[in-house]
Amino acid sequence: MSGLVAEQAAFLIDVSRLIQFATAEGWVITGGELWRSPEQQEIYYKSGRSKTMNSNHLRRCAIDLNFFWNGKLVWDKELIRTVGEYWESLGPKNRWGGNFKDFVDVPHFERRSSF
Ligand SMILES: [Zn+2]
Image (spheres, protein in one colour):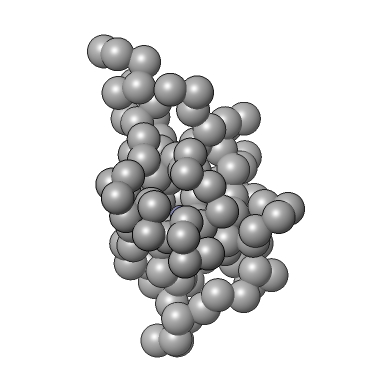
């Protein structure tokens, strides 16, 4: 298995753990974007929706999730913090977008990869 495929697979196993954890906490989770084409990344970059052309979405090592509570979509960083901290506790490569310094991205969960 190549290095990148191993990273992608490990990432997805952590995502499955995250969804189970969040569901047990009472959240209803639906899937957003995982893989993103370079063309789509460029659109997001130019529109300001993303601040990088080096997103982990390009490597299938990032996912955006939708969090629902009582049927309402939630974006509040503090309400989702427990889930974000759980994500980062799963491994040293995991970063939650809610903890990004320059561009807070609450629905975003990624695995740092150097590929
Ligand atoms: Zn994202």
